[in-house]
Amino acid sequence: MLIRTIALITACATMAFAGGATVSRGRFLGVDTTKRDSDPVEMYRDPANHATAAVSILRGLAVEAEYFPQEDSPAELAAKSFDWTSSLFDSSALKADRSVQRTIRFDGDKESLGATITSAIAELPNSKYVGHELAQMVPKQIADLDLTRWSLSLVIVDKPADDSSVKAYVYDLSLQIKPRGAGVEVILPRQTLIFSQQSFTLDAEDVESKAEQYANEYGVTEMEDFKWFFESKDSSSEVNWSSCRSGSRRLSFQALENWL
Image (cartoon, rainbow, N blue to C red; front, top):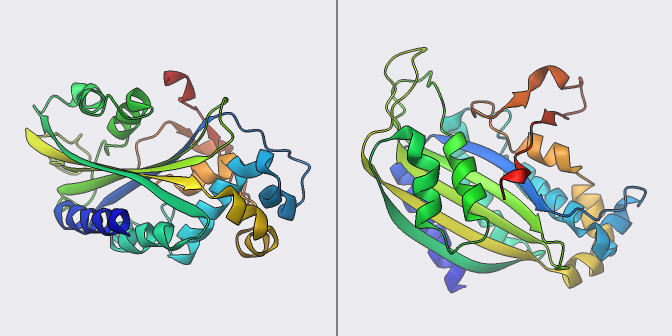
């Protein structure tokens, strides 16, 4: 309960700081042992499939919160962020673990943003990857010149090769972004960044015992669809949009998993 309260207070403060502009991204790390020929119920019942179960639940909770990064504007997404965050704590399938918040001094050199973040969170899992991903999420251009305070929201599902458990991490970086005009690349001023990480562990016992319920509620989300779903349309990711097949919500990502 204390972790939930602290995390939600942080989320409120972050949204107030961000001024209603959010960019989202989803990634998977580790080893996906999912048996692709499993039926939907077995996707939740069999622990070997729990990486897929985790991304299916996360996407399902986002849909319930009407949190649609691919469809919503940055302002619309920010307005839904609190409901999305709350839903993670309310789900019995996810056990809240460590909550981390800190401020980071940033000197305004956009090229060093990733390294600055990585250095400040060096003791956290996947710190180099997280720093790089958050830096890559900064919009290159901003259409609405009134939006200057932003929240970068990164969701990572991680299943280490040497561990049967599945983790979900929700990272948020709040920062000021200054647009210089329509169609002109943004600048990042000197500022204090606000960083937060909330980690969850998939409750395997809960997921297995409610396999039929979760299969009916959330269905099955493939890993690439998870990445696609959480990728903001205004994010600056390297996505091959031309490979999107009509109606399938599937994309070919130039994955960055080798950054570890």
